[in-house]
Image (cartoon, rainbow, N blue to C red; front, top):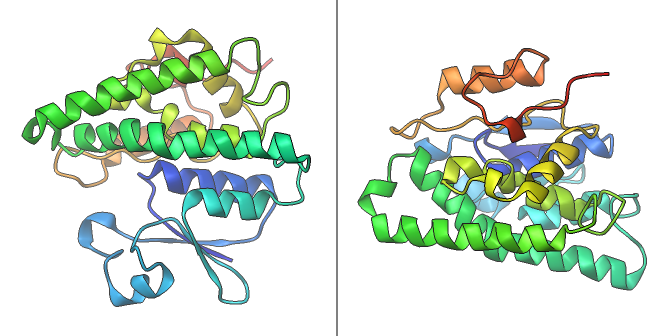
Length: 239
């Protein structure tokens, strides 16, 4: 399989982690979002909407949309319940993620890190407000639970983790939601998150920041977390 992706995308992060968690063998092809590589005829042939991630299966079939990719990969595994109601609850959280988390926190993060927030201040403020409301919803949903469906991690947790774990970048502080912050640490400590816990971030010019990407990669490899990182982003010390 081949995953077409970009390291700054939370949606692409979800696909990478799920591929690793199910033990799939795959290659990664990075497409430069900022150089227009997702808007070419070649990529439109993979995904008519011209977005990433896109997963190319071994038979040449293309799957677009991170949620569809996650559900396809999780089918028949412990990460996707077989019982209809439990499966529907997974779907409900994944729909919530695309409607409320990605649409608000994901967009606000992009505006902030690409330097475009100052050009659309009212839009940016509205996305931040809605993002905080989405985090409050998630806080309520996690009350008394280790994971979204209870005691077991599912693909729903991964779907929400993609942009929730970098909510601070969007100006939606996780420290305001201690239950969510604890859940983020719990998810990040699971197998499969060793590489790319934090996607490469963007500079104000819109290009990958080598310093910030290097810091994230070094942390994923076991180095000390940068002093500027908030407490929620740091993994618990190894026993």
